[in-house]
Image 1: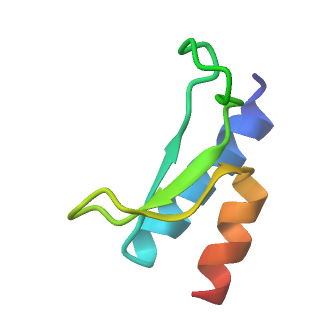
Image 2 (image 1 turned 180 degrees about the vertical axis):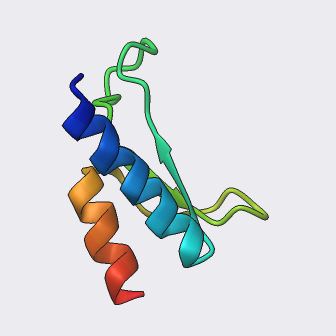
Length: 67
């Protein structure tokens, strides 16, 4: 993973935090068939999924910009 990718992922996490959500990235080596390494947006107080399990960092930024 290069530094540009890391920077975009950190921007996505900060954008989610600004709108009161948590952007959690699934770890694709965790042993699940349906685990592709995408982001999920969660409500922090009850861990309810707000949006997707396969979002890219750019998708998270777009979602948070519209929220």
